[in-house]
Image 1 (cartoon, rainbow, N blue to C red):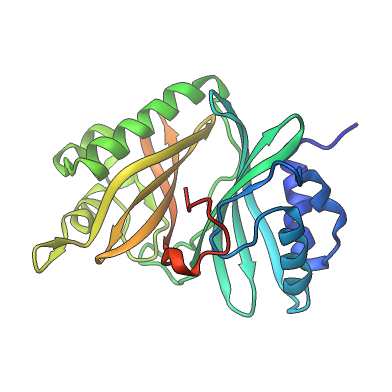
Image 2: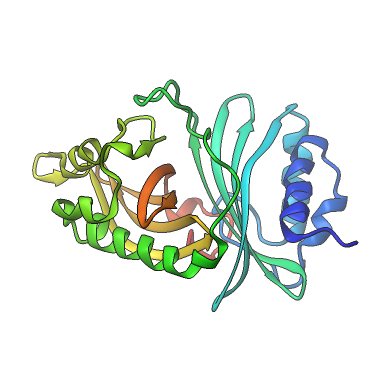
Length: 258
């Protein structure tokens, strides 16, 4: 039986450890669009990258992975731990067409622990449930990000978040709606500390929803990847990565971060 898309992506990313070029065959070389600005276009670029990284004795752990089929195509999105001499947390997103990966996005952050909440940046539930609620949860998270994070209506946090029961994995924010509201409202010299400006994509499977957004953190152009777990119509858990977007002059492809 052919491997499912999540298993194919798991094998692909595990080849970062082994340097084995075989799993890269899941990528359609002729159609592949690479959105990591630091990676060359095409699956040949991936094979070269993985071979180089394998020589550093990296460690790869796919913590959780999900599949989504929506109007934009078929996707796998995964929450990863990497150790490339330093430990990093990453979200990987692949779009599939005709059984092969044809487009890739990612967002990487240095692992920081312990978190204020006492959790790690990746622990917690990993299995998607409530699959029949996928579309409702996707719409709910999009509405939250647009209303609270982009439009800045932090007074409406209670409409979306399970109060003090909200489990936070961001290393700089404590549990609960109040701590999140405080972080979102923080400003320095009249400038917002966290400034979400645009939603690019919302991916979902069951009770897990990943929102990909663009904005600024402390005045620097950044990509925000936010993974939420939904239960009983509220957001109950959150993981994220934030990555500074390099100047275009430093990009190794011209496809853009998003």
